[in-house]
Length: 195
Image (cartoon, rainbow, N blue to C red; front, side, top):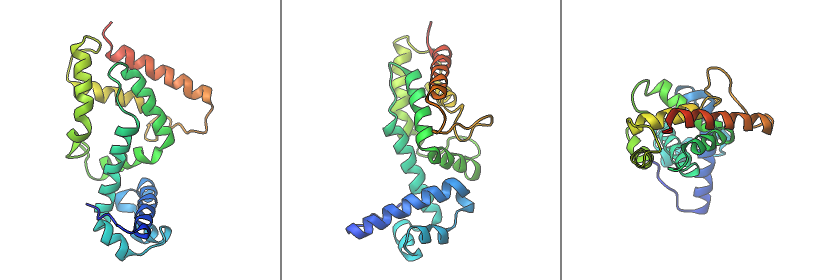
């Protein structure tokens, strides 16, 4: 894992590396990302990058795990309204398409099957507990809470940067985004709500 710097200058360099590397990995993937481009754009050197992160793979791991934490913290699950959670995920994908691209590169280059990360429970346990409680209260269809969560997330990603049909951007009209949010809400409610 990353070695956290202690000086203000070190923290600033560390953050620049993270920002530049996030864009580099999102654009080029793990194999295509280049440390030379990262250090040049971050105005640092390879020695500093390796001191903080170990190597390119560990740098990607740091960025990827932080992206999972961001999505979890910025878009917390709402047990009372999973459809609203899905629409807020849609909005987050518009704000940070790079985070979805990182997950896609992880799936393509490292984890073609199964869970996306070994530590999936760290990010999923709370969500699964919330869904199970909603199921127990009779608000959400019965079944494996993980499968319900997967379905809600899949619906939220219909227009994400990795859509096989159409990738939305934040530049589109507010009315267009609202129509999509309404459809996401309707689809999630019909798919998982108990009538």
